[in-house]
Amino acid sequence: MYLQRRNRILRATPAIRSLVAEATVSPNDFIAPLFIDEGENVETEIASMPNYYRRSLDLTVREVKELWSLGIKSVLLFIKCKDEWKDNTGKEAWNKDGLMQRSIRAIKDAVPGMYVMTDVALDPYSSYGHDGIVENGEIVNDPTVEALVKMSVSHAEAGVDMVAPSDMMDGRIGAIREGLEENGFTKVGIMAYSAKYASCFYGPFRDALDSAPGFGDKKTYQMDYSNRIEAIKEALMDIEEGADIVMVKPGLPYLDIVREVKNAVDVPVSVYNISGEYAMIKAAAKMGWINEEKAILETLTGFKRAGADLIATYFAKDAARLINL
Image (cartoon, rainbow, N blue to C red):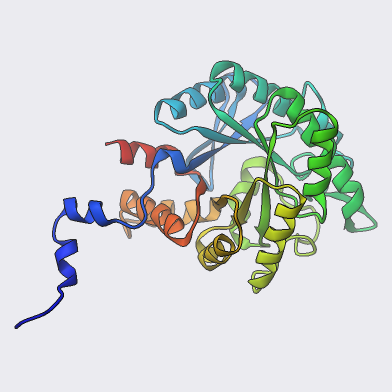
């Protein structure tokens, strides 16, 4: 049989497949989320996230050094606040000697080149478990934004490279940018969780930080998963307000949104491969239903193919090791 073109020629060997691959992943693409707890020499495995841990600051610093040695250049910090420090104002979030602030300083001292990002939202500090201040059963926008600005400036004072507001309050990017500028932090970046959907896949994360909402849900401020155009609107508004990077979260059920946002913006696009997605792969691999290593790389490549420039993922260390083999 005569064929003018045989597409299989470019699939014939590992070498040619590598040469013509359209999307590739490397450790340079990864942001490694870290859960940090009070105490010393504390390492607690998260039951719903096998092989992922909440660590005290001393062990977190050790982990950051290992991540750096694997070529991972950015971490995203989350802290577990003690229950007795939680309230409806979130004031522990801007305590200059709080766990987040101490963590930023310790990591930057230990690995100066590591690009440190921090979560900015009130849920870890809230007695209600919501991302904002509660008044009469409602998560109120403007008072929450004022608190988020204080939180962001506090992180900047501690030496953070980039704040990552995950709260989904209206106008918070512009307010945070103004707060950073007014306080002289002109080099601190903002990675906006621009299209953060109200999702059922956040469960294991909330286990990790004991931050599940104490009442209701987060659908009044996080996006409806039925919507696509809204994600583009949110991203463009955040960029106009001063975001340096925009994010889509979750990842796997929203690859179409990653592509839509990538096509619409002129800043880097990040995606969060979230805890529920991590847990599903881990559970299926434990049952012997999939090959874990192959599933990790295929998933992360899928994010790149969809248009993500950066990937926040709990598989960062495992993937870096696989890529570096």
